[in-house]
Image (tube, rainbow over all chains, first blue to last red; front, side, top):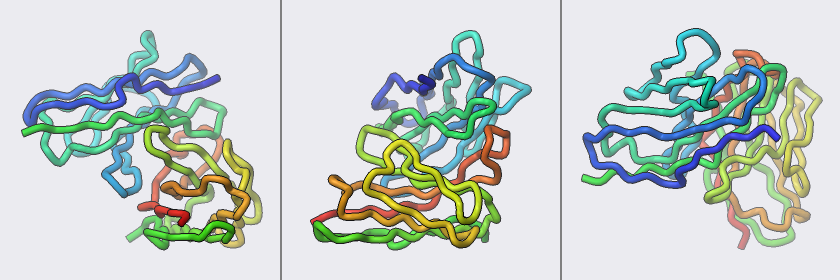
Length: 113
Length: 116
């Protein structure tokens, strides 16, 4: 079955340090890939998306993600984390010809001073 | 401003009661979705709708019902048949259903339902 895996349930980083959140999707047709962020008690906000073209995608709030087809990965990065980045992050995928957005289980980010 | 609204933000229900969660969008999106979110489980699809007067079951439709009488509205009813309804419910919408680039989903702020 098609799936999305976020291997890290939670991650703690120091403010100002770099961040990488991992996302792997199961092999399938060309995927459309997304990262969303959710603050506690809120809906999901789209950070960035990849459909085609340049495999390095820039998003809002200083985030970027790189699509690596050979590794079936779409990892999210930020060079310097701010305390306001503490939230839960979801990776998601839609496969070409499908309709359903498949979400990962999420990674909760904690930021320490 | 365009967006998706959900009401109420918090909802309390006694066991055995049906409750209806509201979802409205003014983005002129064709497709709408309902998800349930439980701690540590990500999002699970309850129902989705491509067009007015049509909707399909998602992965966990049992104990829920929906209607789509207007393009901008997609209310979810949590019935007494839903055995464990306490959760956070998210509504989303997108422009096109079918795996195209326009299928990016945009989310409302959510409704937290608690069964007493």
